[in-house]
Image (cartoon, rainbow, N blue to C red; front, top):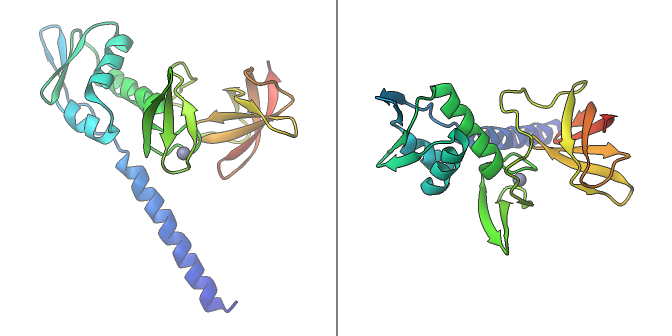
Length: 205
Ligand SMILES: [Zn+2]
């Protein structure tokens, strides 16, 4: 292969990367535009937020009602929460919603849809093709940084591969954990990360 071809390949790869970046930035949720009326919190740009999230507005408001423990109603483009909450609290609930109902559990892509199969809601990823039952209680720490080598995380083993190693989905990574059983919740130390695969060593079961 000539050096020219090699440069071409690099260019192509860069094109792919910047496309991925653009997709990622599409995910940027507008900051909630919050104001207070009496004891209620109004999110004035809720409609814009919903548009980015790309989910049913009623479903999202139902989720927020549950999370805030008080009524959250839609009024045109606005959301009215019947108590005072801060902008940060609204942001973090919306991020949590994204982690559960929007972002693919395997690859982190927001390019997903929800499909009901029997009694299970599946999160179907159009980017990587994975299908995962929606887990409203999954371990979410949105404020935490990305998965890093040398750090510990708590993961749930979702399956055990043919050669006996456990697999867990965590923050868009597949964490490989030797010596565990399916369904176990374990604390792992991340030994190595390669692309979207992380190798974890159990530190506590
Ligand atoms: Zn995916």
